[in-house]
Length: 102
Image 1 (cartoon, rainbow, N blue to C red):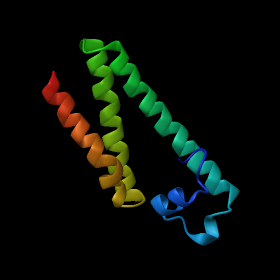
Image 2: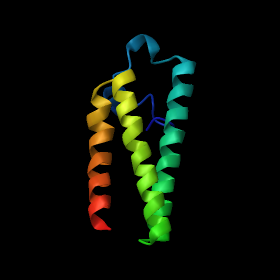
Image 3: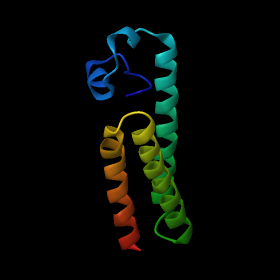
Image 4: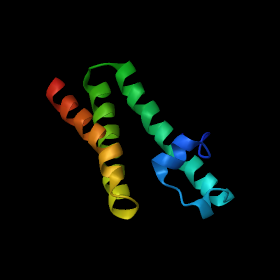
């Protein structure tokens, strides 16, 4: 969403981007950077799943889901509190599930 569809109605609603920033090239670049970062986090979580439920796969999954939780908390305090719910809550539920699975 951040990388390719930042000018879509869905992105505008999700990020509540002020009208005066909608066409700003720097804002688009920052969102693309954020999307790339999120994509790398997702890829690493999938990598942990592909490796499987052994000690290496588990540690990869655990580390990167904690990274998502930390990013959500940081974003919630520095940018928008709703990030804690939108990004953090699913990550925290995934972390709890991961801790109880193994």
